[in-house]
Figure 1 (cartoon, rainbow, N blue to C red):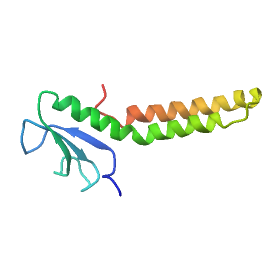
Figure 2: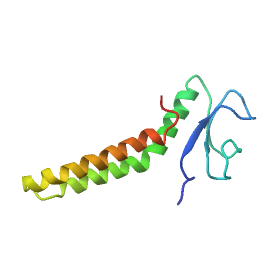
Figure 3: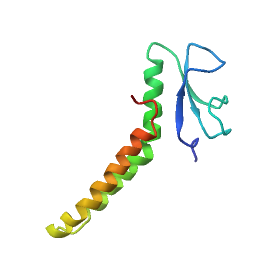
Figure 4: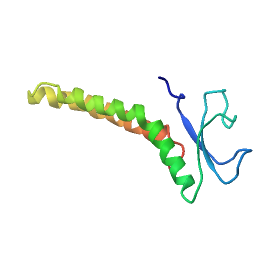
Length: 109
């Protein structure tokens, strides 16, 4: 089963019900705010809930990559010089993955 491609966006600028926030895809029809609604939120926490959901979905791949990176690092020999040598690569990859979490989530301030 496939999900709607990421990135997803939080949007309150649409032609529908003005009292709701929507999660939309940038990819389904090729443009943002083209009416391709993934989910909508209403209520006093609608903006926060929408942005939280978008953040979680858009961060998913980078977080899975980070978990795999940690697992790979833990599988390195217990030989300390080898672990220290591998640490530089680990940190560089970790910084890139964690930066992606912020980059793919324009709703974060």
